[in-house]
Length: 319
Image 1 (cartoon, rainbow, N blue to C red):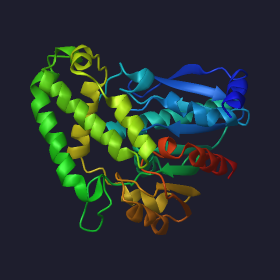
Image 2: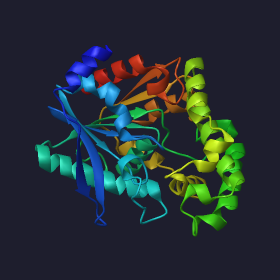
Image 3: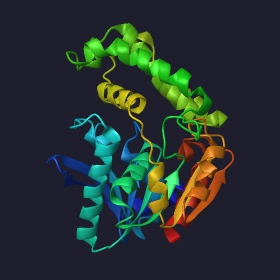
């Protein structure tokens, strides 16, 4: 399998293009493949190029556009012009979709979004409708963050209050330093360790299988010496995003009735970020939705069940 992917990749060079956002910012986008355009939106803290192992086998049939959201991946140095980062990402996504339509003459494109990238698409649908989107793959993401009396399937489910309190504590401790210190190495050691512990906890909650847990622990383990010298380029951006998650409502359920395009809900059966039972309710709230549950997967579907994820992506693209 790996040899075949490597052989295919020789024929398709990964390119980086830029699209001008409404505020004049140049947004980096990784592009690879040949054929029908596809837009793929990445998760919080993710580099869009991490999709490559899954899309390279399909690069002879599709051209994949992988935007890097401001603050992540190739866009690490880009700042946000507004506090509401999800709405900003939705505006940026509109510009990317318009660029693809103009570049390829495609009137509509299929879109896949995972986690935060999927929340961005719910925001996009609420603001712009389904214009220029032919079908949508929603990967383990509810259209609402905060639990409500009529919806208890928000971020972290029954543990939301507990974990949001941890976020608020970290943000409160970090705020005095955020305006004056940009280099992570210059932060007090306790602030650094608190942030890294929350990042590790988030990673562990995102996966649902033993091997994924072990990998997450291994990748996030750092000695005190490593922490002291660590250059964490996205620490401020992540804290800004966590603050927005806590303070803003992020409820896009009103968009569900307008999403009449074919929609696939790909759900991790062991997801601890968005309760699978509540996610399944979306199929009754969307006019044209199908549900696929991956019983052995947590929230991080590509990491937990990579083969099943690839198969689901391929089925989605084939329509």
